[in-house]
Length: 294
Image (cartoon, rainbow, N blue to C red; front, side, top):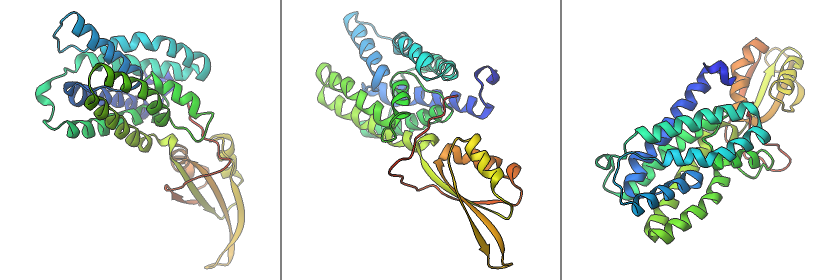
């Protein structure tokens, strides 16, 4: 089934787990406290609350997922036309899963913790991990994630989390108007925790660097970096002090996701090469952020 989406199985199931974690966090920790998610899903929750209040309905079935699916239709069309067809299919899969999970996971108030701030932090962490898993599998949960990926791909100073947080402000202001300032503030804190965790879970959003050492000419390594990862690299020649023989060094800056690809395939590329990585890199200047969506 994963072949249908042009996915590796690990990414297919990572998206499945991510959508479940996101829906679980929302229905178990956030919704029972009367709080809101941001973006399109948050707008769906507001519409759901208005419908429940106007028609005086009481139900544990959360139909905000269905509303979210309807609102996502034009955004999915945008993803199909402007991002990629593969990304569209993967995102449609995640949005449908999210709709199912949001509908079947009960908003069981007895599972929510007493302290609102505890629910906010736990919900933000779990939802952030889930959202990061989805993005790391080269898909999205729809809504503002689609807009975020499109904008972050063109501007290295933006990330999916930052774009989402900006879009969320309109929803939170609405929460403050129709509900209360307390709900607005707690919802903003939840979104902040989610964004923080998401950006550290989303492998394509984290910059890293690697130095590769090899005794052979590094052409095969640089060809892989250039052709398969679509990055540039710098090479130079050194001398190994122990045997006084030639050593070639290759240096590359890339995302954590791209680094995982390089590590996974290095032995097949060059048996004698070894790699030193640095996952705490801050990059300024002309470095292109590439969000893989194919």
